[in-house]
Length: 552
Image (cartoon, rainbow, N blue to C red; front, side):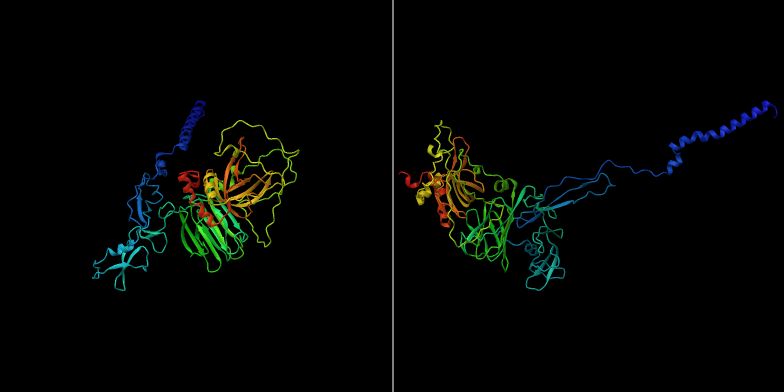
């Protein structure tokens, strides 16, 4: 070993042996970190395989036939859960839906559904022996079980569940299905939670209508007197969820769109209960003391007029209702095209007129009693600076929007200051009939305010009822009179029957309701209303010429 060659060989062999010992670990370690051995892989937990499908409901079947023909039966539809992934579990929801059908009331004298089910067991022997005649027993422990009383005996028998669609006696509006009392939602599905919103939209969010709320605080005795009727509000057609409440010694009253009393009319107090009005149901409530209310679900098919029969001071009558957005804008939002601003020449006023302000319809109107006579309105006359201007040169005729003669297409000249003559009173059967057929507007209105504008008078009126109109009217309108002499005389706060025409000038800058001195104007009375109603058929049958002017 001392020889140098022997020592080299020894170290070579030692080095080779050492490399051979180390090399398996060095070469296998990288692979072992990325890929475990077969035995190691067999011991690792296998991940759960995810299926690419979900369980889904199949389509609904058609509705079955109704359980009975009237009085509110039950129809059913079914669906099947298509299982594509057994790990996921069953489909969420119900496999059956039940809905109300044939809800119309049965004819008078028809046998009640429970009674028919009990009668089906007549003369059938029971397990204990004996046969009996059966009738409905209403004192059973379960309202969805068929409990029948033996006629002529003091015992009843339970024949099991009632048929689906039988009324559940313990809950109004509910029916029995599979032995359970279920109430329908607005979609008529039994057990559904869907409800009508204030706009009468099933499952809605009150987004298609707007709420109107106000308080009437006037006594009305200045117009109607004690023990007289005064109008509280006009509720337009299409309103829903109407509620009117009063807590006083007065009595609420209600008129339909034809000015006919429905509740508490003609000084007769109605019995609280349910009434039919405007195509819907009205619930009238009155307590033993002073509280009373009207509740109407709606939607109404005609205007309703809330009245009050005054017997005492009025602390406030609260009322509210909901209207579709377009109708709300019509009555409480947009301005009528007939309420346009006044167009005049450049006149400088000799004396500034007194402005009269009227509140909007949504605010509270306060009326006070007074024993003193009403004040005489101050008249203001406008005089142009430098005298009256000369009339403009005649213009070429343009297409007319009116059927009257040419002179009626221009406003008549107002009398000069200090030259008011005695007003002409237009009345009588012939004039009523003639103007009813000829005028553009025939309506009943309440005067809310008066304002002198130049040589004209402008009245702010609330339209209460329309009889004959060739053009659309809004809830509030301006009424123009071509003089400042109070002809015809209209008092603020009073109601009148008015016959007027539509006025549009040559330039089409004016579009308004014109009440002339010879227009038919009468204070509103029930008799006046009864005289006007037959005239509509007369005008349609005979044209616009009155009967006394027709030649044989």
